[in-house]
Image (cartoon, rainbow, N blue to C red):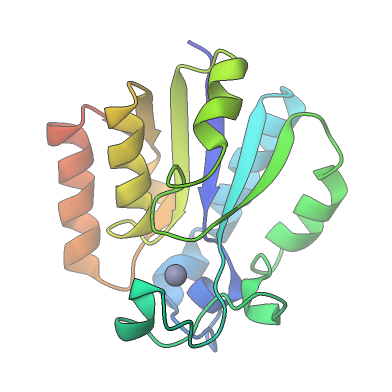
Length: 182
Ligand code: ZN
């Protein structure tokens, strides 16, 4: 097994109390768990991918414009990593095993070079953390399944504003896409 860590949308807008589309406390409670997970991957020089939602304000061509308030707008503080994850990222971002990828849809794989980077490096397993469990983490995990990756979801590193959605997604990961939920 050769694995990579994918951190999904852990930005101020999705996590901070005043974020534009925040998960609130459930999102904030997983900060140290994700921080520690990144430390472990980094010390092993295993691959770390930061996948971050990227929007322009009131983009008339984007489907989310009708669904959600503006969030993760390019160039805003809301799009920065939340709290301790930002200085942590700044301290490791020049390493060969750390990548930042902007994404414009829920899935980290849609219209990005993530799959290509993983395949070049012979990665067969992705560990997915971040928010929201039942939206961007879910769509990323489903695409990873369709692309034949093994999937690990650490329960204490994912969260949602919607507790029922969070619980449903964890069950779906385990029962429908064969993920290891641990
Ligand atoms: Zn978005």
